[in-house]
Image (cartoon, rainbow, N blue to C red):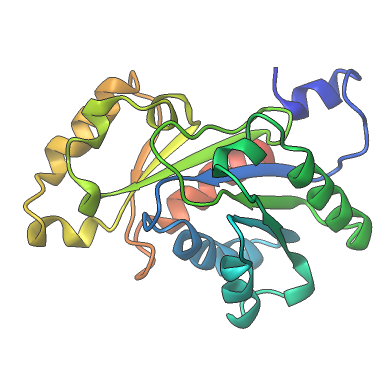
Length: 216
């Protein structure tokens, strides 16, 4: 049972009105680029949103989003993990929960909070005390063997995004095979190909978020 289901069942803290979605994946896979591409698509659909970023000892990703002009800078909060990135999204997500609660208090109408993990390895997963649903981002430049490695992030996420599809011919990746292997190891659960920089596949990701946690 995830955080939202606990709240709907009356078993959670009852403080959170916004849906919370995690976006994790290895360094350089395109997590921030995906968020940048999602923001205007979700805004166009009338979604009131905010973002929490995680970095080791900086606020680099938060500052990038604040400078982007895509979102009110006040709607972007930064968490400095100070240790292994998955610690603050899985073992002890207290800092992230508090950041989400603070955004909801500051913006009472917020419907959706995106939590971007600091870049981590294929073992990174989100605590369901923190998020209702989560996305794991890999990219073709990391190698077409990533699905075959069956990391927990790849296997357990609600949606697997294979980003930078445009690079496949330049890095010797058989993209159709990589996609099929990803679907196979995930037992046909959702996999979407994207090129976040150019917007390819981003509306499909937004569709899944809308359906899974916003129920529209």
